[in-house]
Length: 313
Image (cartoon, rainbow, N blue to C red; front, side, top):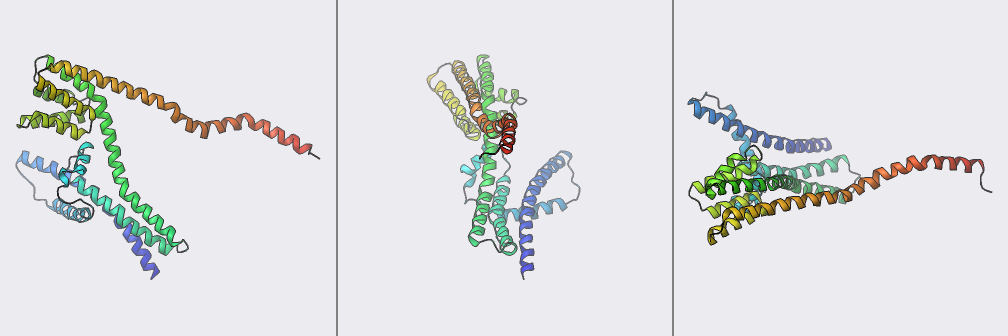
């Protein structure tokens, strides 16, 4: 009986790992199918191969079952969760399902497998300790995907923030050359593709929204929401005030750009000021003990030899 339960534990753990791999594989398959369909549309013919589509459909149904256990209720597409994926630069509609499927596996299946494994292979461990390990594993499985998504978002926001002043300078040049704000947004979205493709893509989406007949203010506010930058919110306020009161847009953008560059310099100075504090930890833990051993080690050895030859009465 114990051997059967051990095998069951191994199978559950393997199922958790396999499900994660299948979720990632399904994401790759979806991208492959999209590329193939694009090629078929361009060429006008399709070879009769349906195995890849059937495999993707089976995996997608399995991922949907897992994701429903932790996926929020209806309306999550316009909630804070969807905004997190947009701010991380993830726009694939299937990614949230993969994300919550992996989160379910890490939160439920992996702790259950660990509990069975500890119960039947390490029976000498107290029950409270097993329970604590299982709860810690479940908590880690629940928060690790969120931490990974948060790190991706912070890294992307940092890149966007550093390139935003250059983008505003290009907007100043375009407006001073006689372009309107709509044409300036469309132009800089093409000019900044090589330097910062993420920021250029966000501006391009706003240009498409304006071109489709959307309100400029709402399009810019959606831009600030997708990027998660407070500087862009300030930029939207400046543009709205310039349109409302009839002030010079180029001059307002120039002032905003100078302010953003000042903030970027202050952030760099702040990071430089934190370096001595961060260096104190490895200095105290690793460098000072080594120096003490090298400098005082021979003297301590000589003292030990002297006192060993002439012991105290």
